[in-house]
Image (cartoon, rainbow, N blue to C red; front, top):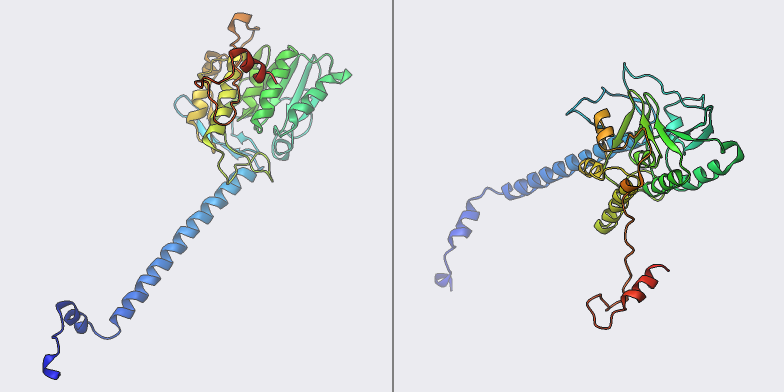
Length: 318
């Protein structure tokens, strides 16, 4: 019945007072605001990706001021070198080509020079360790006593293998005056029986980062697991200890983002023993890393059924 209709509630009366079309205009305005926000975020992401692509693909040298104490962080350019008005051109024994640009973007090449020196120039790629081994095995390389480095770094695993090969052959390492040795390159430098760095040489470290499978040496969009990163960092520190380098050097690396570079001052190179004019005594060489057993699923060292120490040792040697 008409007289029994329920009067409108407070919310309904409030909605009836809203002018017709206002709700639609409000919804439309909200959609426009959200769309603008999405466009702004997308633009920022595109700008960041473009900047990162420019940094990682740049082969033209970048003018940068010389690092000073307390001002040692510089951009890391994986395919080129920093230059400045007071920076000269490094002399590389046996090599007379360009020392920047595409020369550093290419996979590392080796050249025999005079007076028992050889040059290694370019990126450390997957397979560079085997290339160095083959180079040093050549008859014309028999007299090489010092390897001169000019490299923006690259593959950590290959750099570690190169360092151990260099030390086993009792070859020294050197970064020439105004030379560049960054990222994984200092690990190779650490392998030298003696180690030197000339005036104006840039020797820099930073964090380990993942690499892209389709373009080795560039940061990957897929993050490696924390365990993998920790394992790689531990291998780097273990190498430094083996080579007589102060592992505290790696603290500087872990504190520096992958897109940046911590350039070591000459006094730091000496303090961390990365520069060492005389061979290290055997007592200064750190112990090798232990070999850890792989336990089958459900088995642990605390399990009464776990293998004996002798069995574990046998397993780790396989």
